[in-house]
Length: 142
Image 1 (cartoon, rainbow, N blue to C red):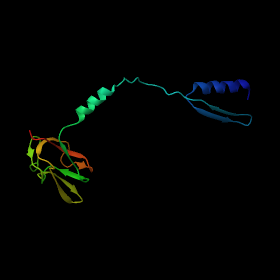
Image 2 (tube, rainbow, N blue to C red):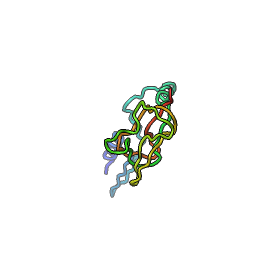
Image 3 (cartoon, rainbow, N blue to C red):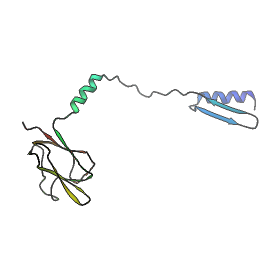
Image 4 (cartoon, helix red, strand yellow):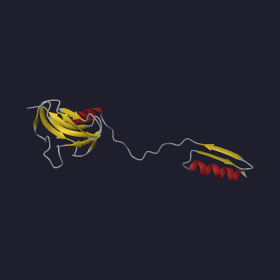
């Protein structure tokens, strides 16, 4: 292999996106390495900490979340097509049944931990729920 061929290989390597290359022939052994600079495809806009804090404040919703105490299937009523236990805007008292979670063919009634008004229901009927998943938010009584 002549020196011009080696120079050509080195030139091609330097212009390629490859970071490492080894060439081993009977006549010659070449090992080439280079550091590749990351390519920036978009420019990020600066974010101020005050904007992030304001967004977090907006995300925090008032009230008490009722969370799934176990994994299972969420039911909003006792029977298919039945009247839901609660609806948004309904007043509930501590201990009122809000929903049922079925786990291993056992129907577990989920009761309200506080007095208040149902302000949000984030699970649909017959949906699978995970442990500690938010189900229903109970707002304070006005």
